[in-house]
Image (cartoon, rainbow, N blue to C red; front, side):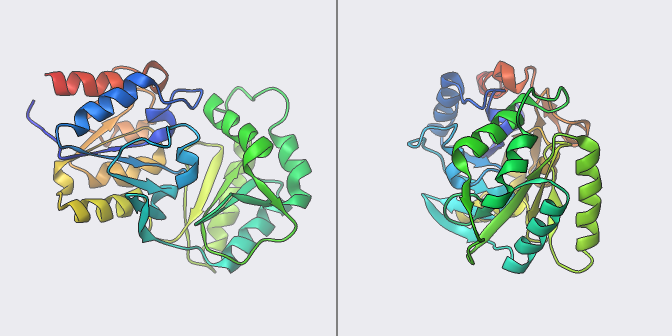
Length: 284
C-alpha cells in the first residue's frame, strides 16, 4: 500500500448508509478499528448535525463532523466553524418554492428543520403514493420521514440563523426548471447551490462547501489534505474529492465523481461498500 492516510472523510447518504438509510454494525466496527490506529475519521455530509443521528448511534466516536455541506463543522460536539444564510434569502427561496410547488425545508443552525404550515398539504402530496421509479429509495424515505416526524410546521418563519435550504421535487424536469429560477436569483443575491441527486437542490452560503469544513478540521489536527482520503458518491462531494489527496468513489457514484478519483469501491452503498473497501485497504 503506497498511500497511508492520516484522516478519512466519509459521506453518509449513498456512501456510509445503505438504501434504507442504515449504518451497519460491520461498517461501524471497521471505522473504530481504523481510529485505533490513530487515523482521524470525519463524517462529511449534507445532513444537519441532529440528522446524522437519525442513522448513526448518538455515542459514535469520531474526530469531527462537517454538516450541511460545510455550513457547520463540529469538533467534540462544539461548533468549530459556522456559516449563516441571510433571513432575506431564506424568505425569498421559500416564496419561490411555494409559487412553484417545490418541497422545501429550512434548516436552522440549531434546532429542528422548518416549513410553513400552510404548505404542508402540497408538500405531503408530493411524497405520497408510490415512489417514482427515477427517485432513489433513500431520498424518498427521508422525505416521508421528514413529513411525518421531522419538520416543525410553523405559521411564520422565525428570525434565527439558518444553515441551508433543502428543496426537492419528484419530477426531474420540474426541479431542473426551478434550479434555473435559482440561478436567476443569484444575480441579485449571493449564495451557492449544490445537488446530491437530480431531484434536489440545496441553498448555502457562497464559497462554502464540504471542502471548507474539512479544511477547518485538518487545520485543527495539523494534517495535510494530501494525507487525507475521502469516500463519496454524489456531486455535492465534488469539492471534497478535488481537495483531498486520495479521493475514492463508491461503485454507485455519479460519473462526475468517478472521473475525479484515484480508486473505486468494489461494492455499492447497499452492499456495505465502505466496509469492504476499508477492510481490504488496511489489510493489504
